[in-house]
Image (cartoon, rainbow, N blue to C red):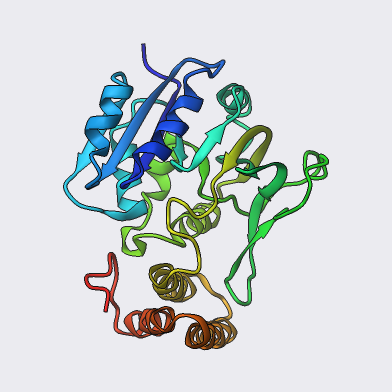
Length: 293
């Protein structure tokens, strides 16, 4: 029988974290789904470990780390379900998560869910995000708030976060895949902006809940590597989608130098990589960073 939902989980040297995520899928009340784990060239024995623990998953092994965008694209291309759930491996799902997803699947073309902090069970990490039209910077909505149902009614996010994204496969055929030039960071923001530009809708499912180990799958926002990709990729996002480029680039450059200043005080490698991200954007470098200086 064709699955209703294809769940795509990207793994890179995170077998224990992916195992916990997969374990949260086992007791789901909606059972009509397939699991596609895309391993991005792990060196920690992830493929062998995961297939032994979960023999029914569809495991795709990439020879190298292709990044968030292309790794998930490969999963989507192998999906059999009519709906796609792109899921971070650093999340744990409520047992009724897929039931709520399926019940609300036609609410919008792209759907997000309610994200809590993993270690703070009722503290929101995000219910969505908003991109400032002048700076093109994405800001989390609901971050660090106690969940009192304040967003459950009469709230529609302008964008959702990439920890869990539900999308009708037909929509992907219309808007295209995640842009692999981003490698990681801003790729889901660009994807949703592209979808909205083509007239597609975005909303969320308040009763679909997960708990997120924030930053574990990417290393967090204060590492030298994350500084590089956040800086470089925001430059590309501004270039493609900003209607106020002078303002957006001015603010972007200001933020780069604030990162450099922070790095000089805390971590000189962080400062160097933030600056390199800006330089590489102007030089047109895309995809995975070939060498970390």
